[in-house]
Length: 244
Image 1 (cartoon, helix red, strand yellow):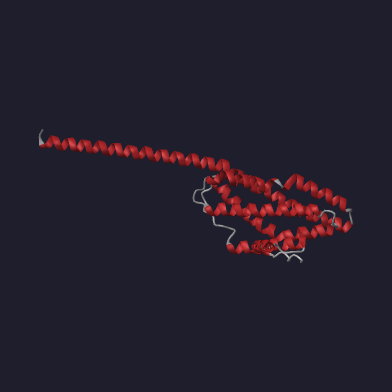
Image 2 (cartoon, rainbow, N blue to C red; image 1 turned 45 degrees about the vertical axis):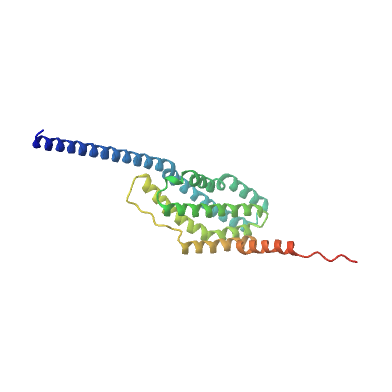
């Protein structure tokens, strides 16, 4: 075999290998792109599109709380009977509030892997927690529904600062969900519930708890420590000596 023929074979083999490599890379990139598109479609269908509506409906809960506040304000002026307040509160809890945090919790538990932004995910988790807390406070309000309407109005007034902040969070999260749904890929999300915001909201929770129970939120680590210490003291307490 001549030198030129050998060179020709080597060049041909090199070209063949290069074509095979390029074809493989192209196929691989195409498959990756296809997977990314399918994942994006799944995220839109399972996360972002539902969130647009869930977050919007959650605003209905906040609007209902405002309406309740105004209703109790009018009832306090007209001195309506507490029985009417009981009916209104029970109807409100039955029809509107309990499902909201549960829908978000289910979504975060089963579809969180489709959320790419860790900051957005963190905000959703914090928001769900505060929303659940609001529903718990409304449940406490039902237990106090035999109170005078002016007292019920006062309880709902205590929720106002917290609701205002959460409504701002809804606007931010819903805007991001809309952007993802319409495939605005360059739209970035900046976390709303920063450490400073979290401290502010915890202060509002304290005030709501104080209004409804007369006490601030318990310092759980401290109380658990006291509980454990009480058990230890009980176990180590010496029995009185038997009388002779």
